[in-house]
Amino acid sequence: MLGLNPIIKSFDRLPDSSSTAFFKHVSAEDKPPATGPEEFVPVYHVVETMGGGPEDGAQAGSWRGGWAKRFIPDTITYETSLQNTENGMISITHAPMGVNSVTRWTLMEAEEGQGLVLVKTGKVTSNRMLMTFIRTTLQESYEKLANDFAAALEKEMEEGSEIEKVT
Image (tube, rainbow, N blue to C red; front, side):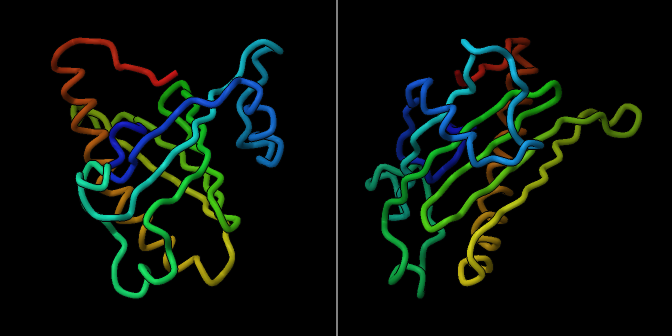
């Protein structure tokens, strides 16, 4: 999923010890199930570039324009965790200025013979001033990410290969 996001410049897995600190402020319903003292859900340090194109290190495009470029830096760094679930994944992100999000991506059976459906549900918390901007930005990027994810999944299924997991 990290590799599909068009504005991610880079991502690096943090040491396992950062998992404990990351999940300390996550609600109980969103925390990963306890799997044992030696198992950690990976946490990644992510750099997004808002500059606008591959020359800036981004994979494509930018949502940053108009008034936003005056207040939002060209590069944003944050921490995120991706948890595999039985039928999808959960992405939890802690970003600057108190922006936190939990997004659940679930693959479900469609009506008979119609294949699979990708369902995304999300919850974002931030200060009121940022919320409209965040909603607009997330909606646009999630739509593209969902389309790219579905295309990658279809390709993997056609090739009959295993879906690669980021760990």
